[in-house]
Length: 511
Image 1 (cartoon, rainbow, N blue to C red):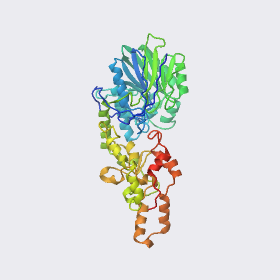
Image 2 (image 1 turned 180 degrees about the vertical axis):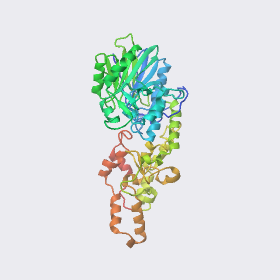
Image 3 (image 1 turned 90 degrees about the vertical axis):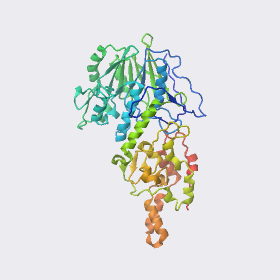
Image 4 (image 1 turned 90 degrees about the horizontal axis):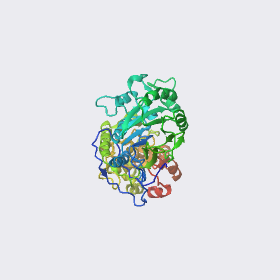
């Protein structure tokens, strides 16, 4: 019988990985479950100890920690590590295989984050990561640096692909064509392929990318004789392509007992798709779930599969990831990415940000209401976390992914800083928090005109003044459709109700 359990439970935002190594301690930090959450069902219920067990994951899209800032979100490497620790304490032989799709972008922060994620996966015991489109958007030289085998390279050999070649040199060994490793006395073989759409994205015809992608079927035909000659007990294909491609590959290559694929929904089906005797599996997106595959070679069928949602009720945060998170955030601080030209853009209005205190010179009632709002204290949560997180929280005040919704003068959808937006506490403390101008637009011109008008009515062009006043006005329909959702999306604020939240911040006064 195939067993699956996917449970929705409240999750607290915390932790993830960084670049450094750490000890093998399995100590975990307490996480208080939300009072409104019912006790979830047990996971892996009725499972006997398998001959070998695999964590199967992929399409993490940069989510090192739980998916979003809400208490109700799932995921995070810290919880995955907690589950890993619990299974190892039971004596389970455990390793991980990741499909790829590790990142969302390929900026400098994402390159640092990539190493952070990989270090976390390596700590948990992962043996292979498929070369997907996200990985191949990174500079090929960086991939060589990270994955070449040699002394002092902890990630050596981790990247695999049967049909991707870097710098047109197959003998580089990055990515490896396949891997075979021993787990619980059994041999596990794994390889990966990139499908048609991915190939077109990372190596388009006529464009020099230093990446070559060959036909996946031809590549697997070439790899399988050598791979099967090592007589693996379990053979897994990491299929970075569409669902239809994965099914076709499963049918064409019945040697694979398991095909893990992309192309499905964020919260995937709990049941395998069976093609012949091959199980085609999906693990979902953003690290919200982890798939556990149990191998029972003497049973029929020899596999068990369960997709586990990583909630904060059943899974605490493994403190091994504290060290990794601290290293990652320290790197972001050292790189001072908020000042990077890579994420610096002019505001479309051409105006500059003045800060809420300046707005409050005239708009006294609105400013007084803002000061008492959670918006005014958004930056503080980056410093100390939410209630109950303080003991293990790692500051995020240098992390652009977090700053973009907790300070003023950033574009949260694209994670870029406008030219006069918040930089740091030393130089732009007046822009900390979610302030007036994130909704009304930068107001320096408006402020200058109003100040001049207050001193001398005749010194200001009235048309310019009226235009500046009009530009700052917002109605509730515009706010609901275009403003709040930039940060209050379904991930970061799944319980967001505009009417309720609007009442908490609404400021209709004209003073």
